[in-house]
Length: 188
Image (cartoon, rainbow, N blue to C red; front, side):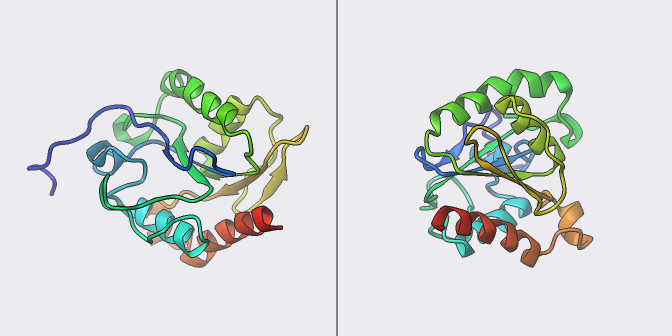
């Protein structure tokens, strides 16, 4: 489908507001999404779901992300990932996650007003906690845990992968509920 396109094919940086109060952590760039376009969650169906939810919650100026330079801006939100390159078979290795951990740890450190983290999927959830060096709260869709010592609220979310969205494990209403919850925390 994309054979005539030039792929980014390199590690991806986080995308969004450098002064974000919301951090969204995903798994890794999709082979034909972020790996192709050079921007997290851009150009694939997971991104369609994610950016639509961010838009409806007031964190994005438009509901879709097609390519870098398409005018998309995030407000109070930054998107990162547990792994920075598209992993073989969409499953990053333990070594790859460990190699990428310093990047997300540094992003956390730089987000001085971080109040909410949404982890998209179990791998992202665990990767964030390893980078944050926090105790391990329970994972479950739309389960929130206040991290200790004034840390952010961590909200677990099923990943908006086709496997989850096409089977109904994650619906638009469920995804919207997560980001509406994040919005309420930031506004409240």
